[in-house]
Amino acid sequence: MNPEPFLQLDRIIHEKGRLAIMSMLAASPELSFTEMRDALGMTDGNLTTHIRTLQEAGYLSVTKSFQNNRPHTTCSLTAAGKRAFSDYINLLEQIIRQNKPK
Amino acid sequence: MNPEPFLQLDRIIHEKGRLAIMSMLAASPELSFTEMRDALGMTDGNLTTHIRTLQEAGYLSVTKSFQNNRPHTTCSLTAAGKRAFSDYINLLEQIIRQNKPK
Image 1 (cartoon, each protein chain N blue to C red):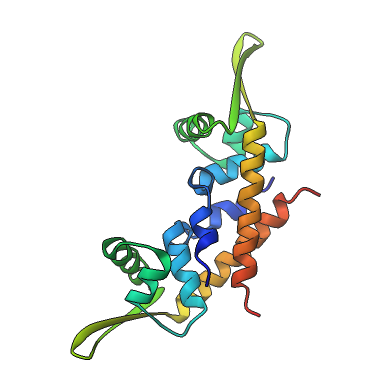
Image 2 (image 1 turned 30 degrees about the vertical axis):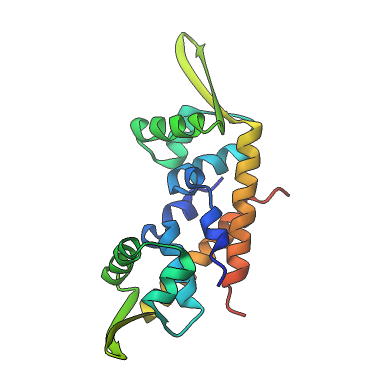
């Protein structure tokens, strides 16, 4: 067993909640806070914390605007976020190949 | 995006260090504490904590014996551990299929 791929797994993305957020955003140009919260069944606080972590890592950009006079927050992946997510998925593939019963 | 597979990922196995331990054990009938520690580059304390967590989940059994008058600890996956690991890997596959650029 080669432990290398495990050690390389990006800790920021590996957390389940953030993995789900990154996957959703990888599939859309942008998503609103509400769409993500409802799809993932997260609390506002939980989603806010994960978004902040991803933003600090440079993986996600947040846009705040107003829609019908109410604040409207949307998120999208940055170029660095797309790259990090694709690296993460490639590593997972490697781990699976390594672990599938022959 | 279907968030279901993420939510089902086994938290016990998903942690990187434990994922590495489970993978090593899935590939061998049993491994000694020393073999695992050296292959994974973990401290004794770190490996001991992960082993305890996996043991409490019923995924891993620990055998303590003596070899040349020195204590010798080996670990192996239980049937439940093998099943949980294979479920985990199957879910990862699903996540990857869902996320690969078409």
